[in-house]
Length: 148
Image 1: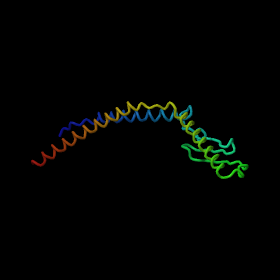
Image 2: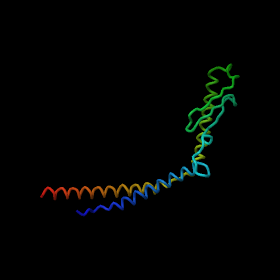
Image 3: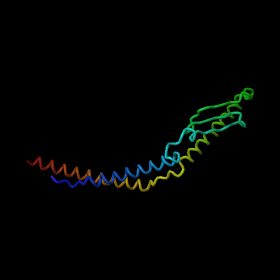
Image 4: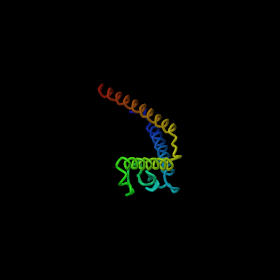
């Protein structure tokens, strides 16, 4: 039974899509890391901020997770409302610093999403046509076998 399916076309399209994804991934990791393409270190992704004119210091890890909080002991007499305001100010400043650092690290990591989307749509379309052809071939083979 001769099949009308050409798996090499689908295979080529999948390889092209994977190549584009690999290039996008490589571009992002090379631009997100150091000059040698390594991943950014923890220091690059750490944000720091202060509140209350430096009486409260906060440090956050990547994506804003609070890592440390230092409150000057002289604030013990200030009251909880004031301390809470300064803490909030410091944490928000640290989170803003981390976001800015992350933006700097990932700046320029542009992916040609239009080309990637187009390639993936082509792969999907070819796969659909291939599966439709395969189903037709299987159906024809089943009918031939039923007639015997």
